[in-house]
Amino acid sequence: MDDVSKHGALEFWSSGGLLQRVSNADPQQKFTAFSLTTKHIEVITLVENQAAVAMYYSEGSMQPVGSSAVSHYLTRVTEVFVKEGDTWKRRAAHFSPITGGQGTSQTAVQ
Image (cartoon, rainbow, N blue to C red; front, side):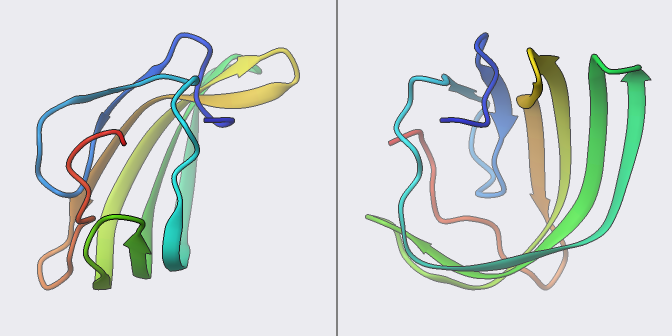
């Protein structure tokens, strides 16, 4: 995955499953349908030009290939980014559904 750190990432997905270890060598996620928007993005710098945390809401609909459709995806997102060369890469993430919304239907790295 292009946006994952060379060291990988630890992630809790909005499906409510267990902690996932994601590698930057894992294949890019594919979707049959994907329409998500982000709202109210806040970024906290941890170390200038080295590490930051982004917090936001993500909502819309999607259907990952091989998984069921999610028509009312609505989650809180926290992502930790590190700078590798000139590019920001994800090192950790936590997605949790908001009451009344749905999380992803995925339960493991495919």
